Amino acid sequence: EAQVTQNPRYLITVTGKKLTVTCSQNMNHEYMSWYRQDPGLGLRQIYYSMNVEVTDKGDVPEGYKVSRKEKRNFPLILESPSPNQTSLYFCASGLTGGANVLTFGAGSRLTVL
Amino acid sequence: AQKITQTQPGMFVQEKEAVTLDCTYDTSDPSYGLFWYKQPSSGEMIFLIYQGSYDQQNATEGRYSLNFQKARKSANLVISASQLGDSAMYFCAITTSGTYKYIFGTGTRLKVLA
Image (cartoon, rainbow over all chains, first blue to last red; front, side, top):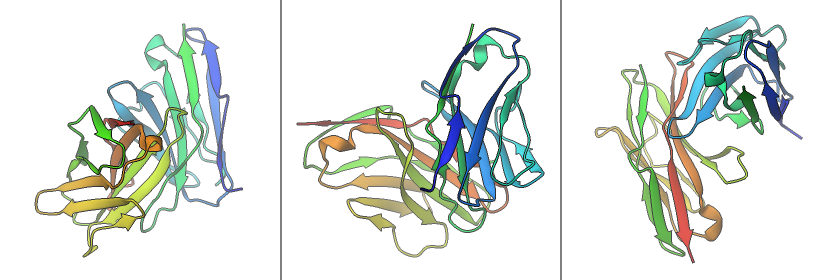
């Protein structure tokens, strides 16, 4: 089954404790991206990647890091989480050319205390 | 930079009636794509419909159609014959060929009434 898998789905952590949210896709998509969803703000793009070793900042990259060492994986790293990073996070993948329809993961709900 | 504006935070529609969800966009890139996604209460994001900037005809997918007015920079979603299962949050989005950013609006929450 074609899918984007995110882990963990739910996480409660404390300020300053480094964490990684993993994202993996099995569709051989070049494009991968991370979003955060907050009430009233919609989905805001954090980082995106056009292919292996090619990443760029979205609209809200502060406090986050990403890497794209393999085509299928695009982890999101919070080096020192803060309470304002409490949010619902989505990973998505798609093709870079033409109609880039995104396939989304199920979402990861992160709470930073 | 691209921008998407959805001015309707919430809407109600009677079952079996049609409803239009508004979306306006801004971009200086002549080549772009417009998308609508649905997010039910279960949380997943579901692709509904796509319109390319050079497409001559409005996109349709079953009960969904996209009213694309290029000069007005609007890409409204029309849902015909609403069903209770259409109750969800709907997001409009844009991506351009010049950048690989994929920008979403703030969404419209639709409630279908029986």
